[in-house]
Amino acid sequence: MGEAVELTAGGRTVRLSSPAKVYFPERGFTKLDVAHYYLAVGDGITRALRDRPTTLQRWPEGVGGESFFQKRVPKNLPDWIPTAHIAFPSGRSADEMCPTEPAAVLWAANLGALTFHPWAVRRDDPDHPDELRIDLDPQPGTGFEEAVRVAHELRALLEGLGLRGWPKTSGGRGLHVFVPIEPRWDFTGVRRAAIAVGRELERRMPGKVTTAWWKEERGERIFVDYNQNSRDRTIASAYSLRAQPHAPVSAPLRWEELDDIGPKDFDLVSMPVRYRELGDVHADMDDHAFSLDPLLELAERDERDHGLGDLPYPPDYPKMPGEPKRVQPSRAKATRREHGRADGAGVDGGDGGGKGDGRSARRASGRAEAARRAEDGA
Image: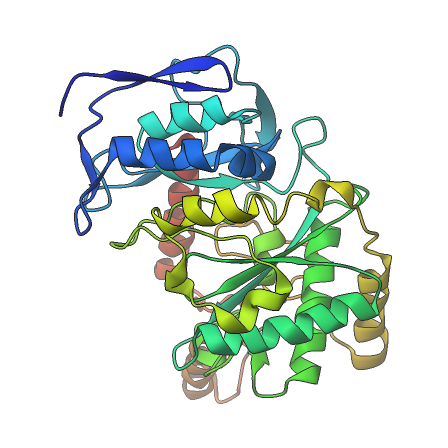
């Protein structure tokens, strides 16, 4: 794979082993190409990651090999890369790296980290997010164009409430919009605001947008993934490479560009060119911090006037206060039918397992084990 090389980033020297190792076989991009990419956009991705606990999505053998999420601090972390102690929904905790300079990104890239997943918090206050993250996720039958139409309506909604969002591609078919906020609310409050955004978009674009957690209920609509604002849920950072054959990038955008671009316009080759010409188009995000009060007032109206309560959390979470029953609708119906045949009445199926059904316990145990392995970076 070639002898190790040394690269300089921000005055620090970082050793890159096996620089000729191929990371993107379809296009022949190597580890060295990845390192040069992150050097080219170094200030931009550092801005996106600065002081944030960051999970590394690693492909040590390239995108054709096995991958894993590294949440806990990797071994041999240099003493110049700071860390933060964060708590997972399971009650466990860990130290995560918090990049503060381009050399930290380069160091992680040497480990096979292609995608960086920062928390929405800073290391000095890991329990209060300073970003509201709105994930516009196209469902089967929809694509990037539909996500763009929803993004335009989202922009109007935010601006009508005195807020501003910064859009970026997901690196796939979707769009992300980040709103910098004052770190005054916990994860529950920020998630509640995201639900309010999704429900308002549902009203404004009926049949085009959904907040339905269960895939079987979403249809051909854009899903507003409100749970991306839950504790320990992260979104690929701006400038992160994504593990697709063509080496796409999660690209920061200006609102006026949305109708003229496509998700494949930004990759390992094209993004450095764009960066040289435009710089970091999200550079001013940290100059703003908005209040969530307008969105929380919207959430309160939904609850008070429309009887709309909480929505399901991710499956690996403990049962949360006020959360509806976490059971797939079709399973709940099947359970009610089974109880109806057995008992002569339509008994509610509880958590979907049915009394005496050990499968639910095994599934819950499996989810907990999967969450533990993810926390450990296994």
